[in-house]
Length: 290
Image (cartoon, rainbow, N blue to C red; front, top):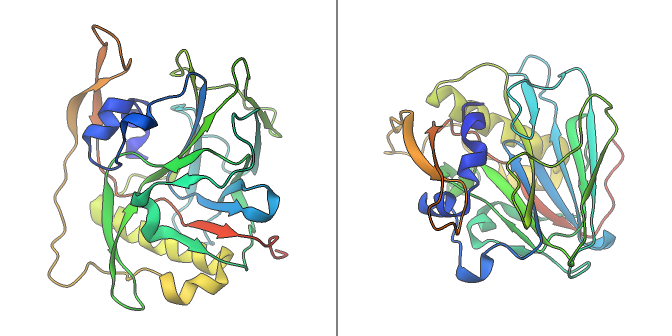
């Protein structure tokens, strides 16, 4: 993924807000003890109202013959073994338990309700408790729903935020012994971060990436959310009259320590590869059998 080298810098609060992708407010500043789970790329999220509003995040394997995906954990430059299935579980002691998470208005175009869903064969699955907030960072890309030609805006990631009780420590469990289930090195006092990244194995240009992202989003609906497929699948082409943007890599400063008197700056390469996040579904039903 081209965004891999910038993800941690992009997650820095002032930098992310400056991109205009999400509306950060004064009351959304990090809590004294906060956990952030960053899901970058093609993850579907299911908020399970029937299970204390816990979240199951997963990324289905592409069907045979389609562009294969790779998984990166905590910003590693080396992808994990694509032949394995990775399962994680986050445990923590939140400040407020089991409440329905606050969902950013910027995610409303791709937040759906369903009673029929399944996980299927997934490269990565992550069990998460109910977050305080679900938001995103960075730009959103314009897409069009096929059924009614309605234009919408798709984010490239989801960020789950948890406010913890004082002294509480999060624990990330993983079944794959080859991964060190620790927090990201760019966590800082008061904020613990975990990064999960999914993207195509080979580098794609803007047009290829856009086409792949639309196709894979539609595949997630077909594979995991059958009741949503007809209404919410995306049109394969750009809206009529819309030209494909020419976006080029650029180097910009990123603030890595928010609130410092003389914050440290690091140049971060930022290339828009138009990789989309998956749907955010809300359900009160257990998953269907595979």
